Image (tube, rainbow, N blue to C red):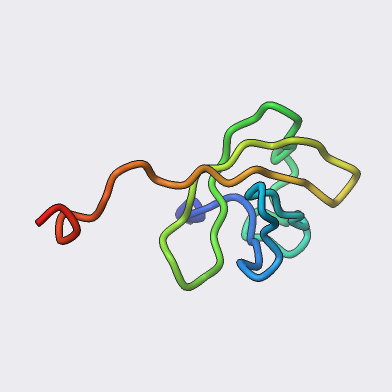
Length: 82
């Protein structure tokens, strides 16, 4: 079995102005992974099943719910640099 491409699923429509979004462990690709235990300060990958996964930092956790801050890539695509 291969590892999932990302740790948590997020809805891009729910991301706030500070790039914070609530995710549910039970809705993600690692829902059955009993060793998956994200805690504040952890770095992980989030995905929406349509775009490439993004890096995120866990801000807090309440049971099955995890709030993360998405870290946008700092590199521009090569087509944007001219």
